[in-house]
Image 1 (tube, rainbow, N blue to C red):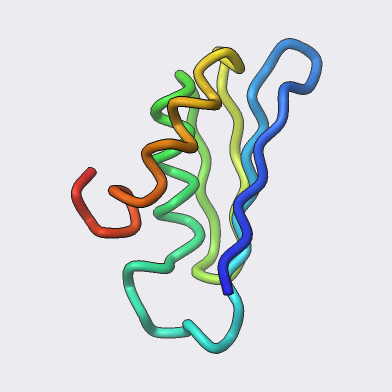
Image 2: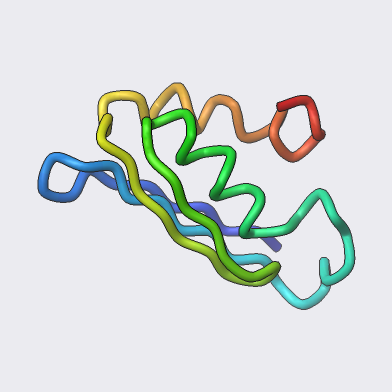
Length: 78
């Protein structure tokens, strides 16, 4: 499975992604790439390993739109 969490913490966006071992090797589910794409949408940056990643941004008000983009990010459209 895939878990993606986002929160407004101290007026900043925080994003975390974790990918289960059952999806290891499936490039669509690389936590670092997912976080990198999402944090760009909240004016930030981040990344990490294929199984776990985190990042942040300056625009927490953009978190809802970033989370709406998750299906297209996983499909490789962004």
